Length: 326
Ligand code: SF4
Image (spheres, rainbow, N blue to C red):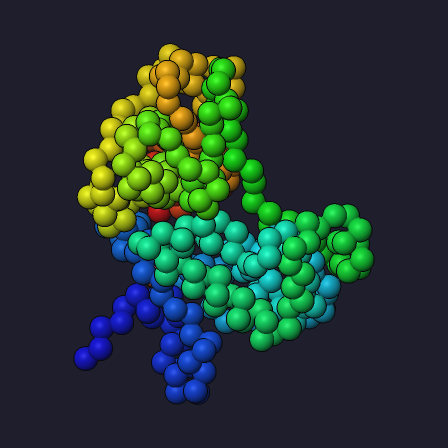
């Protein structure tokens, strides 16, 4: 008997590919445990690496050819851009990708720098190999401008550049603020006393805290969330918590109230502060708040708009409201 549950969730055609001698085509499980974490929270077993797993009806694993071939230009070779490129070329389209960096990966590259998450690099490596094999044209070190894009005469353009970290979080003293990207990439050396303002509750803040505390610095985390790192579920959170001792406190309303969303009005003196958030995570949080308050106890989710799986899951965590639409 061979136990390979997650491997088959990441690629249900694993055995078929092996029989056909296509080992290199197998999408490797990266051990992120997103699937298990979701199960333990009562959600569907989705896969962080394979968006079709658990969504087979609306998003089949097998990609069919398009009736009409198009020229598709994609800006950004992070995970979203790479997946768009892979699916587009599988559909039979002619695909061009522009990337400002000298290699693909985006934020996955940063997260994979830490030993605990190094296997995440396969999310990009597998897609890059598939895209290269299928003939996607990549242009690295190209901060694509309008002329670059129009020169490809595209039928469709996909902008997958992600966003920029918002670092204007203090009423004053923003010169002290850096982003988690600066820390994870090693571009910024942290100080001796560091305050992390984490209103995303995701891995980036935990990874930055790990890295900073490993330098011997004192780390304190401030969050407006009701629980610690709600986007990082149990199987991933425990190892983080086993790391260095961290100070944690919930952000009080008066410290959150500022001229902008999430702004700290009264930062403690003498601390470096950086923000563990990306604009993508911010938008998810906005939908979450709506979901929490439009759902009735025990009833279906009554949110007005589409919700991400994260939003549904966090909706469940709300002590007053329960969303069953998971
Ligand atoms: S979510 Fe992660 S651990 Fe689970 S099957 Fe997918 S790649 Fe593997």
